[in-house]
Length: 375
Image 1 (cartoon, rainbow, N blue to C red):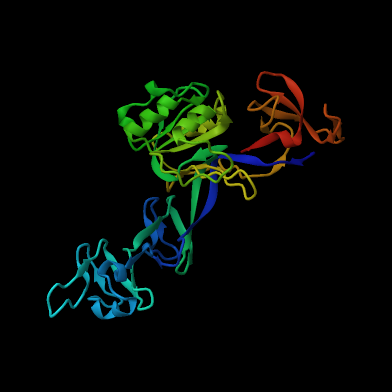
Image 2: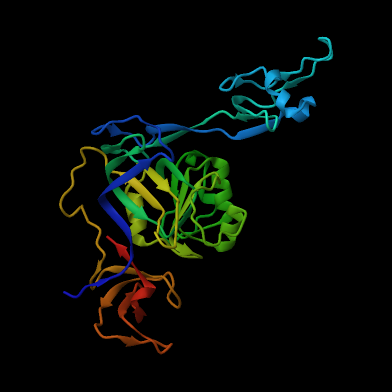
């Protein structure tokens, strides 16, 4: 059978994933190989050094820099509290002593007789890395983190914003093409991962933030609503570090676009189960896709047909999505794989697919203009 190869999104009922959970700097790993972990369990922790605060004691006490060290009341390594005296002058005949109190809390790092400055480093900030997805620790990386393996239902999105979050799946829409508006968001969705159908409105996003929704997974979003949500034009960037009040994942793209029926049905079948969602997206080299992971409960029986492994091979009948005009966002399936090059309207020659869209229409589409919906 003929095959072609094209990038694709993974949407599968059951697959095995391996997640690297790594600290930004070296620290302590809290789990061992073979441990079973929950999604919100801390697997590694460290402390990020605090900010450095220079204080010019020479100016504050009106002293020559070389006289500052003998007036300092704290040694290097001492901790200081806000309002605690750092240095005191000898005064005149024991009177008229000058004193300077610390404006911040921290640790004395250096005192210089050249500049007359004291450096105080602020308190260290704790950093914790969670497992993110319930599973088993299959490898420990000393002082760095671990690798967690899990069997999950897996949905990759086209675009997302916001970082990692957790919550039970709640269906907000009843069909894959229904617009997710503010009326679909209710108070008891607090902490949930809500699933829409088509476009999500700006009003729905703002209400979801107010309610305390953990994440929204839906088909699409208008660029103006995204701009209002972010507060700026996104441009070309890596997302995922935004602090917006919730995480947003679109499975299809931008505009009034419906979620693929297969994706909607998969999420609906897992309603009530806990999901791990990450909106991090990078669309340039080293592509990163937003993802929804729904762990398979231990003891769940699976047949061979339940497990559908990822593949990059495209064969006749596989579902695809058009990712460029004039068919952008439309879903269909591969109807044929012509072997010969095809002359495009621009006059260039390219390899193409013959695609049958969901409405029965057929078209010749360059292979670079489609994305495989992996199963």
